[in-house]
Image 1: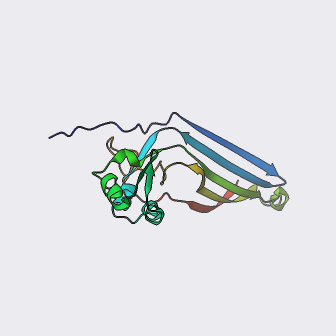
Image 2: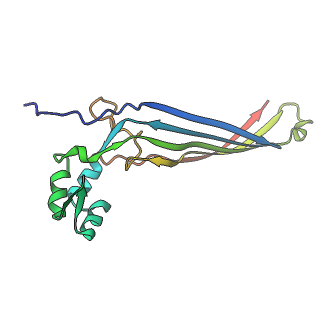
Image 3: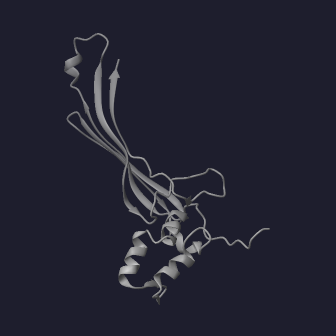
Length: 179
């Protein structure tokens, strides 16, 4: 039997924007890539489940305060409120978030060894060394998780977080040898 389903949002951003630049000075280089996704909607069923069981920060804060405020109304029975809206069968629109985020996608600090070091070597013309970090941090993120994380590539679960893994941050070291 098909339930009466209602569209809650659209994952597709209004636009994406990025800015990359490289600064160089006396053999050193600094490269960065900042990118952003603006618009789109995502849902956190993780947050809904945590709220239903009363183990999220939001439910703890509400219990300490003695009420939940939603659209100008105060609900003093905090447990009943989160039991009603939380979980997978709750009111999922309460867990919809704007997917807008801006992040430092990549940062690299490099150094080119002086060319004079390789004047007497017949094969090597230069060596560049660099430290690279990717997915370092968000300048802004409206969702309680990384909106780019996906638990499925199918149409039904894009933009939905269900206890997904956190986004990965990576650090690396590059050696580029010029022949």
